[in-house]
Length: 256
Image (tube, rainbow, N blue to C red):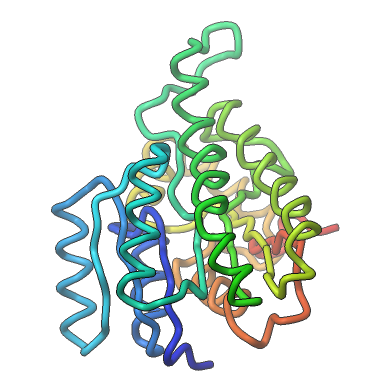
């Protein structure tokens, strides 16, 4: 699977899954734009990509702010002349407590929904005119197993926003299919990124962890590589006839 000559924007790519997506694309010949608000972590990712001869751009972007996104897209167009891949990875519920619904503040609701859903909408909106002109493109967004099963570690607004991303994916795929643009999502189960590994061990007892693992037919949590491999497939020409789908990557814990 080669991405030589392709260009990609990966939001939230300083750490975790976003970093893994960007590194994997760069290793396969893609020019990647690293975007995040964590400038120190971005510098590390850029340095690692350059260490193996990968080509990347870097830009501080708040994916909930339209001016930031416009600048990001324009810089990519100026450098590459096109945008082949957008991975809407920015998201999460960092800094927002998991509390009963009656205790959720309006500010915490908006913060999480904006970070997950609004960012996906704005970044997609920004790249679509260029992909339409090209008559091609791959848009991949991050949903979650919580959209299917509910969240044990995450607040309700996170679960709702991830479910909305799957719905957004289906609708936008209908709109863009005639332009040769594929729009898909991935719904990871709990994945052992550095941050989530901490949540897994700190918020669950050993007994709770064992009980959870018994619900997974494959008997383990996802690795970063498991999710990255699925993302690369959906961004590649091998997936040219797949659109409007949320690919559940959860070891069989949820299947339709």
